[in-house]
Image (cartoon, rainbow, N blue to C red; front, side, top):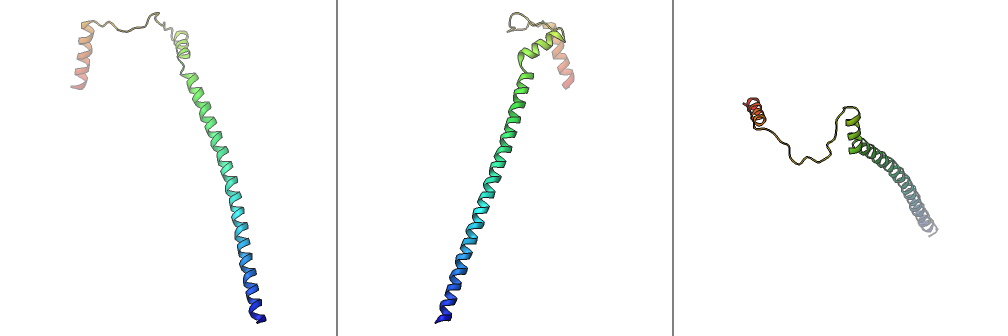
Length: 106
């Protein structure tokens, strides 16, 4: 009787120890995963910020005002005062273009 109660006590103690060990390991793993998640969110935010900064830089470089200023200053181009809705092309020019296109694709 004494031996069986001692065995059952040992079995219970071992079971409780295994449950506690499993609990501690699980908590440690959860903390590690949360730290990794926070780190990866920070990395993602940094990358998003860099991408956003590059998009802003692209918008600055491709802005119409900058391109017009460059064209006027460096290339000597002049912007017309009125918007061109239609371009006048003579029949002779159209025939020349048609001839060039047909020669190229024949």
